[in-house]
Amino acid sequence: MLTGLGSCLPLGVVSNAELALTVDTSDEWVRTRTGISARRHVSESVDVMDLATAAGRNALIAAELASVDALVLATSTPRRPCPAGAPEIASRLGLGPIPAFDVMAMCSGFLYALSTAAGLISAGVAQSVLVVAAETYSRILNPDDRATAVIFGDGAGAAVLRRGEPDEPGALLAMDLGSDGSRSDLIHVPGSGGEGPYLVMEGRKVYRQAIEKISASSMRVIKDCGWATEDVDLLVPHQANARIVQAVAQRLGIAEERTVCAIAEVGNTAAASIPLALSTAMGSGALAPGHRTVLTAFGGGLTWGSAALIWPRVRSVHSEL
Ligand code: COA
Image (cartoon, rainbow, N blue to C red; front, side, top):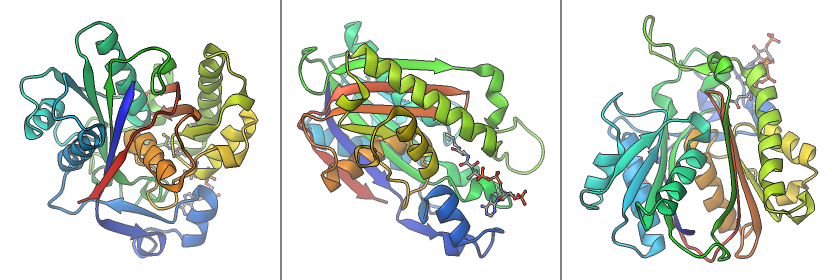
């Protein structure tokens, strides 16, 4: 069951107006087409491991735990291709020689890592797992590509899962994961050659796929729980584009007031998007203990995933770097 949330954002705020000084775009276009007003970018001295470690530490503080039995890091923007970042985060947090590894599912990474953590607990490998999702897309954005430069931002979120009773609030009641590798070129970073390597995205096609896959995956977990869409108190979708969030809510028949849209100040933070949206929703009071909650994400791969739970009485701790 979920027992604590943490998050960390870089201090550097980049507004649409600032981006428009170097990219061929406008504040009006970005706000109306994506719902984004600003995003955070790391400074030169901060990297994805710093954000990940801070978010992980915050989640441990929130869960009032000094140690866990395993750590899973979700990132698609690692500091280096190998080794995995998770062992270094475990070491920086003083967690000892615990199992620690990365999963890479782009924007669906948090849900993939969460279900991996739940699997470690069910298999008896761990009693508690720290799940961290951290991204620094600013490091792989082509500054001349206006379609991606305006959307993505940096950030990290984390959650602690621990063994609990299946009927306790915070237990993962249903999970759904999927992929379609035949469309892997829709969002990818070319292997080599040219400048960068930078992220490349076919925005229109991704947009359509995201709505379709997120809606279908959400429906599967809602049905698996024996709920109807009217029973969902809060839908927390991956924050890719405010229009995608609205379209998914409309397709599922879930009112906008019961759907989290927290993209305006941070943009699309990929794997970190759901834990960051959860922290924002807790802060505003939109997410409260007892809420029947559905988390759902879509990302490159293509990958998608959803989870349903009754929101537990948990704390969320945030910091900036
Ligand atoms: N500023 C100004 N104009 C822009 C622009 C920008 N930042 N980005 C694209 N445009 C222009 C295009 O060049 C195009 O111009 P044209 O008609 O003269 O050719 C026009 O706007 C429409 O482009 P299109 O790509 O069809 O826009 P769109 O409404 O689909 O919005 C995205 C583009 C990228 C915002 C949108 O497709 C999107 O959000 N896709 C999903 C992205 C996503 O979620 N990615 C992560 C998935 S996890």
